[in-house]
Image: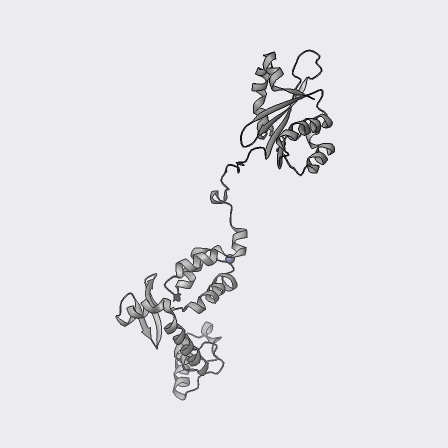
Length: 301
Ligand SMILES: [Zn+2]
């Protein structure tokens, strides 16, 4: 066996090696340093016998393998019983292989071993193929897919696809009136100098009830006064939506809204269209063409 170097120089080394191997087998001199243990030898060891008997018991008590055992008894579906263990015969790449049918209790550890520890987070298809070379069980494809979907590391590294898009949905509309108001400022109303040249517009979220309070200017104090004058009749709302104008995001307005236990909602910057009170602009502008309706619909503070 020590003639490895001779393979390069001596043309008759093959014969010498075969002769040595024959001699060794004849004399029963099997090397103790061999790292490879044959299948028959591995099954004959005491530990292997114990593990085999445990595996056999797991297969027998596993209710998910009942159908496979029935198929094996009738020699159908590629199932067979060998050495007391349930196997499945399949043809992979033109080779017929006998795959061990894994009981329920060992499937998770096998998936972790193949996908995480040895496979370094293989893809779903590769994980399934690698397991399928030596093992199988009835729900193998589904279990591999579920395990892959629940692997935290794979989910973090997965590419973003169109399936990850969050669909646009309508907001929750409150059904109770006077609980959510849209508030906006409007003005100047006239081209000439007028005492009340601005107004604060209110629109109820649920009932679309509109209202406007005319004010002298658009300071934060005027806005707070207008809100207080209107809400003293309707009751204080729980939500109020405004844009990002300084008179609405100022500290005075914030404190006022907070003092009446109202939650302010500010529209996204550069998107004032979210404030639906703005829709009243056109209608209110038309109303100002008629002085009679102007006096009836608007209150001054
Ligand atoms: Zn993974």
